[in-house]
Image (tube, rainbow, N blue to C red; front, side):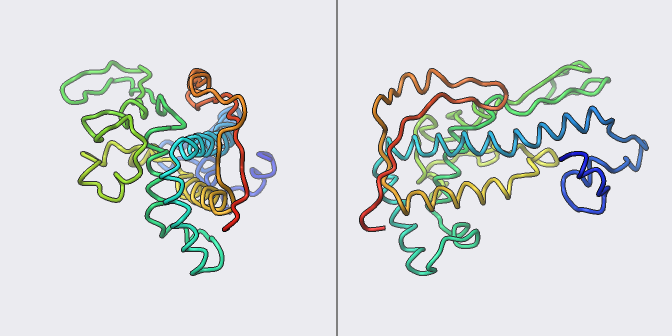
Length: 243
C-alpha cells in the first residue's frame, strides 16, 4: 500500500503529501525506513484508538442506563426529523457529542500521551529545565482525570459538556487528540466515526453486559502500550422494539 502511495508522489493532498515532501528549510526527506514506520503508526493510530474508544463507550453506556436512554431519545428524534443519521446530522447532536467528549476524556485511547524528544539544546518550561535528547510525555489520562480541571473527574458524566461551567474548570486540559501543531491529523475522521457508530448502534439496540462479564477483570486487563489494549468485553446487543 505504501509503495502504491509513493508512486503518486505529492499530487494527492493527504498525510503522505507532507511525509513525502522535501523540507523547504533543511532540504531533508524521510528515509524509506522512516516512511515505513510512519505508515505503521498511521494505521495503528487510525484503527486501534477508535476501536478501543468505541469499546469503552459501550461499556460505560451498559453501566449507565440513564445515559443510554437519554442518548437514544436524542438519536431517535434526529432520525424522525432526518430519516437517516449522517455525518452532518450527528455532528449537531449535543448529547451525542457530550457522550463522545466524555469518553475521550475519561477513557483515553492513548493514556500516556504521544511521545516527544527535547531538542539537543534542551528546553525550559515554566522555569524547569529539561536536558536535550530526553524523551518526554504528557499523560493524557492523568491530565483529563485531574480534579483541578474537571469536577468529579472520575465520574462518567456527559452533562458536564452541556453545562461546562458546572463540570469543566479548564477546557484546555481536554487533549485526547493532542494540542496545537501536534494535534492528531485524523481528529475530524475519528470524531465522525465515533458519532456515527455510537448513534447507529444505540438507535438499533439496547445494550447489556454479556454472560460472564466482570468489571474488575475488564479494568484489570487494560494495558498501556502507548496505544491502549483491552481485554474481552462480553455484551448483548438487543434489538429495540421501538427503533
